[in-house]
Structure formats: structure tokens, C-alpha cells
Image 1: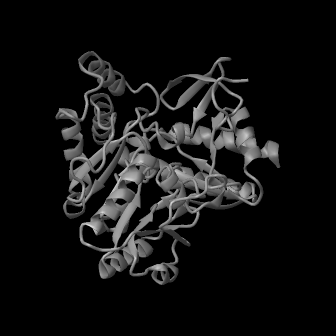
Image 2: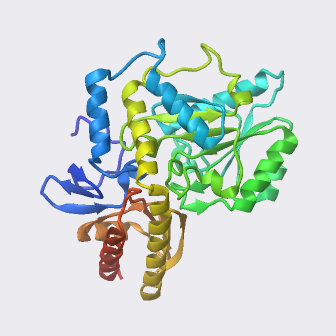
Length: 386
């Protein structure tokens, strides 16, 4: 029996090394990595700028308590605020923690205004984390089994159904929490017109709009944040995954008015925003800019989707291709798990997004040749499955 708790359905592989868009197992086999640690390895593996930044920071200071001012935390906050158009940032260690902070802030915001609003509306098929509050916020029952009693105050409606959302709003609604693109839930894209209507609904009723960009943020969809593509700005934004390109860091950003409801003692994190994690995140943002990775994401994303649509002509089992940037899903008419295994046998790492969807999450600096290679490997895998 393993000394590690059995909380993951692990692939029968032990990965020991990564470089660029490839990883190697302990038997020396190489794989093209289109999982990227589940949208984490923004810059791939072993990027020289990351190696140098983390090495330099380790020699200087790994950790400093938030009892003190941390220069790189301030620099990162200023950078994220400038990029997002929001007011200030709170740093933590993961997406679940960022969403927990957002939930607390939304409720504190209304509490400070002597309002009884506490309920948060989220979407079915959403995924917001595995803390008790965030798994309750998640619109998938499978993650909630065995953990009752769950915290009250959450309601779920279908994504892209503005009428259902309007009908769910009550005098107790504090916030609406949405993913602009549901990664875990099936690579389901929130329509731009829908997000614009949600923004208007929130403004009309004094409701906070919270966007969970844990998987979509930091360039994954072709813009720094997915919400930019809808031409809106949320009141609260959550980030994690790709922000540190492998170093754990989460962030919750809010407008100045909303952020004012957090003061000393209302929330905190021992490790959140320490020098090492902030150094990693600053490096990620610098490389995205210096290497024009947003442009690469847009081009490679279109290449990947076009290639999958071409494969659909050969393999009608592919029913739909959807996504934004380098968060792409291929919905199959059958269970997708055998195709994940077959792709891995061919040397390509891909992921599930629900039982019938293959999810592709390559690093943002993936090349044109690597996209073509992945498509060829996937074609070989599909031939063995059909």
C-alpha cells in the first residue's frame, strides 16, 4: 500500500523530467505534453527565464511572512491590477483558495452595507475547487458525495441561459460566479453576449460579478484574461494555475470599492504571495510579453482547432470541436478515456473534460511543428480505437 493517500486516479506512469513541451517517464519514454499540469505549465518545462528567476530568488529569500511588506508581491499586484483594470490583489496558493477568498469578500461586501444578501449563483457543470465552500459552489454533484452537510447559500443554473439566471436572482443574491470557459465541465464556452447580459443584470440589481479564471487566465485563451474577449470587467477575478507556471500561487483581484471590505484580520494566507511564488509569476508575465505568447496562443489555437476539424472528416466519432486559444475540447460520440490511453501509447498526453471530451492544454509557447506532431499522434491513436 502506498504511503500517499489514494485521492487521484493516476496514469500508470512516473514522470521524472520535462523540457519545453516534452516530458519523460522513468523508463526513458518521451511524450508530447498537451496537459501542462492541467493548464499550469504556461511556459512549458525548464524555461531558462524561470530557472534563473527561481534560482536567484532562492539565493535571496524563499519566504517572508505577510507581517512584513514584500517588494515582489507589490510589483506583482501592480502588474495584475494594470492588466485587469481592477483595484487590488490578494495572494494565496491555489484556485480553490482564490475562490474561497472571493466568496468571503462578496459576502463581507454586502454585510458592510447592512444587507442580508449572501446567496451566490453559479453554473451547472462548473468547477470551483475542493474546499467545502468551493465544491458546494461547483455545479457538479459528483464532487459533493459524502461531504454533507454542505454550506448553504449556493444556487446553480445552466450556462448561457440568461433567462434561467434572471429567474434565479432574488433579494438575497449577493454575487454571480462564472467561468468564462468551463474547463473541467466539458470545455463549454460562455457566449460573449451572455457574459455581457450577466454584467448588465448584475449592475441592475446591485449584484457582484465574480469570474473564475483559474484555468482560463494568464493567456490561456489568447488574451491575458478571457473576460476581455467579451468586452466586460468583473467585480472580482480569481486566478491560479498558469500564473506561476508550476510554482503554486493563486490570486483574487477586486475593484477598489469591493476590495475595501477586506481589512486586517478578515482574511489571510501564510504562504500567499511569498517572494518565490511572486518571482515566478512576474517571470511568467514578463515572458508572455517578451515572447509575444498571446499572439502564439491565438495562432496555435486556431491551428489546433482546424486540425481537429480535419480529423473529424476522417473520424466522425468527433462530434464537436470547441474552445478558445489553447484550451480546446473535442467532444466524442463515445467515452473518451480509451482515446486518452491510446494517445499516451503513441506519445501524446491529453486529458479528459468529462466522460466524452478530450481536452488539449499545451504550453503557451507550443510551436507550429508540435501542434502538427500532436495531431498526427492523435490520428494514429484514433485509428487504433476505431
